[in-house]
Amino acid sequence: MGKFAIHPVLQEIAGIFIRHGKQVFLVGGAVRDLIRGRRAQDWDLATDALPEEVIALFPRVIPTGIKHGTVTVRFKGRSLEVTTYRTESGYHDGRRPDQVTYTERIEEDLSRRDFTMNAIALPLPRGPMVDPFNGVGDIKKNLIRAVGNPQERFAEDGLRPLRAVRFAAQMGFDVEEATLAAIPSALGTTEKVSPERIRDELDKILASPQPSRAFLLMEWTGLLELLLPELSRCRNIEQKGFHRFDVLDHSLLACDAAAREEAPHLVRLAALLHDIGKPLSRARDDAGIWTFYQHEQVSANLSRELLTRLRYPNGIIQTVVHLIREHMFHYESNWSEGAVRRFIIRVGEEHLEHLYRLRRADAYGTAGQVPPPDFLLPLTRRVDAVLAKNQALSLKDLAVSGKDLIALGIQPGPPMGRILTALLEAVVEDPDLNHKETLLVIAGNLQEQYS
Image 1 (tube, rainbow, N blue to C red):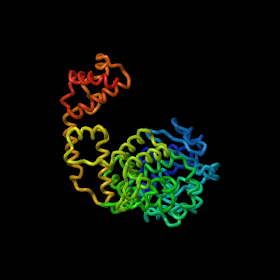
Image 2 (image 1 turned 120 degrees about the vertical axis):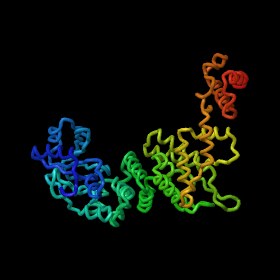
Image 3 (image 1 turned 90 degrees about the vertical axis):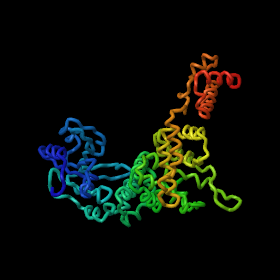
Image 4 (image 1 turned 45 degrees about the vertical axis):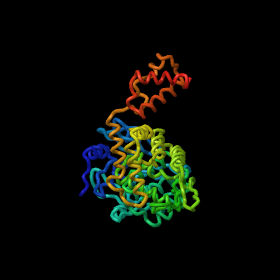
């Protein structure tokens, strides 16, 4: 096995196959990672054993994709996808083969895979590597190259073009010229892929060290216009003032900055989409200068539509849309403490750090320069000082509750809600008012006004 250290659990699993006269190979990303000197995370196995034979070998097997020859083996806390050697034909849905034919040779199985770097098999427990398409050589050259004819590979699975650019961003590899050139003609197949699978690939791009690497390749190949047209239309939308870049490059730089800071996924997503409303909100003022009034609201609305289309969970959609809507805040030193408290309430204490990160990423995208260390410091210091006082920032922090207002004769319903909101506004402006007796007096005075 040479330089590759095979995990003891894999060796034990291999022993079970071998004792029953079956071959087994480690395949896919795990082999690629081992060749690159990285720890293999997910273990995928290929075998000449039929699915029902694999099921008989292990006590816990889940028939996850048995129609296509794949089962999931649960073994000593690990989950391993085990697939019988196969060839495929017919891809009418642009994603899955219509027909699977089992074969006896690992080389035939490797020929159906997407890229040469993923078409390498490592025999278990030992033996010479099987590399019929020079995947090892391509890995050493940092090259993503389709197995065989790239147009045929992309016609089989419309997700493969997106995987190619995703790998480029994740690994810092280049996409081989013929492979890249084959992507535009495969867009019709990519269009058939489910939104959930597209979303998962986009999330992996956003998790990469330099997401812009993939998004620029997507733009060049037409994938961006197909999958993220709102972002694609930001190209050549010039900006004013300190902005050195058009809206698309600015957005990609902001996304890269968020990735470089290892910001959470929500912030990276918001950074990518925060200005997609600028093409629709652009107008010239009397001096002939482009303006983008209320672009944050337009961007938030478009982002909601885009993220809904890609089937993101509602919680993610709501948070990203909220961050985008709030990203244009403008702090001034003459803000009163009440203004700082209202800022905290509007943003939400749980979203403050995300918004700060988004604003820093946005600032980087303006000129491609890291903002100074004290960027936002005057605001964050004041926010922290207010939070340290534990003052009322929500209805639950008020010294009175709905029950107290009922005792005062105020019935539940919209009027009570308006009175509670008015009490909170009063306390935000003057925290010293947050005493039960004081608030009940104010509520009583408001009762007739809001009834």
